[in-house]
Structures are given as C-alpha cells and as structure tokens.
Length: 253
Image 1 (cartoon, rainbow, N blue to C red):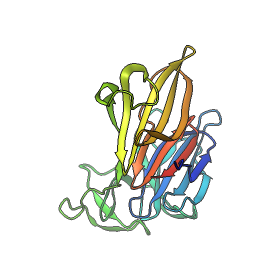
Image 2 (tube, one colour):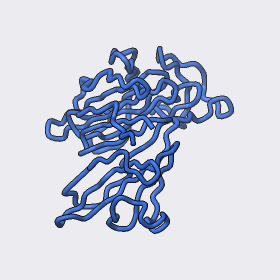
Image 3 (spheres, helix red, strand yellow):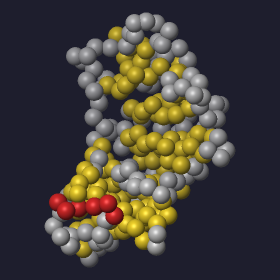
C-alpha cells in the first residue's frame, strides 16, 4: 500500500486568512495575517510543480490590505478604506511568480473576475459603471459586457458536509464528534475531515482513504473550543489544507 505525502509543506508567518487560485496557471496566492505584529503578507505557490515563489510579500500599508484575486499569473491586491470598514479601495497588481509590482491604480476598486480579465469601477462615480481592465497594464479595455465577460471558473471543489450516518458503518477511521463530516470523493480516494473529542478537548483530523485503507492522516487542530469549518479544498488533482492555521500543505491525488 502506497502512503501519500505532501509535495508542498510551508509554514507561514501568521494565520492563513484567504486563498485564491488561478485556474489557468495553477498558482495559489495566500493572504497571511499576523495579528501580534499587525502585519499582512502574501505568499504564492505553484500547485502543479510545488514551487514556492515567495512567502512574505508586504505592501507599504502593513495591515489594511488584502487579496482580491489572481488572474493569468497576476496577483491583485487592495487596501481598505478604513480599519473599521470592509470597503476596499485601490488595485495593486503583482507578478505572482516574482512578487514584482506591475501597476497600481488608486482611483479604481476591484469588482470581480471575468473570463476576459478583472472587472473594476470608480467608487467616486454613481451609479456604478463597471469596466474591463487589462491585467498586465491596468489600462481600461472597454465597458463591462455581461454577454461577453462571463464569470470565471477557478476549478475549486469544496467538500460536502454530511451526517456520518449516511456513510457505510465502519468506513470511518474514528467516530466523529457531532456526527457531521466533510466528505469528498476524487479519483479512487475518499477524503474526510472530522472532529473527535479526546481528553476533554476537540481535535480536527484529515483522512484520505483508498478503499478501506488509510493512506494519509494529519491532525489539523487540537485543543480547539468549537467545531471548525471545512479543512480542505480540491483544485484539479491538488488537495490543499491548512494545519494549525499557519501551515499550508498540498498533496497530489
């Protein structure tokens, strides 16, 4: 029996806050927030090759910044208008393989990604007028067109949350606490994330099974106070999960 091993295992300087994946280049970008130092940083990993491009990119604004998305190998970042407001402002475009800034626009704000590129708007103009922009230069291409500019598929699959009772008895490696599991089938594998209650504390586990055999197991969180959200996502054949809030691991299935 072949046991699986991660081909990416990276510890980051803070809690993993957000992941965005480029469906065309297979580059995953990560927003990392270190509350103690009030520092937001960014990382980029190639999910096909396992290459880690960078792990601690920062902007001049240390805290009030975050990821919008990634398109065609370009990472799009933003600032926040105010510390107490969720509103975004500005677009900063960075090469996701070199961390080099390509362009920035402090008049526009990001709206969403389309098949033809990023869609943005000027927050100072009402009603909102959406624009298609060139991701490499930041130049406006034309007004956004709902017929031409379809939503972009990022090829991310999220597990289902199901009652353990729906599964065949005896097929889970451990009895789940709360009777709910996150579950996904892919190729010949069954992927399960579940919680257990041991020694007076909750734990969160990830199991990968091939038939009845456990080919991978990791303890994701321990001594936690409440049930955690889904522990993993799947992008094409790459299983991505977060361990202890600060570690990113990727396995090929």
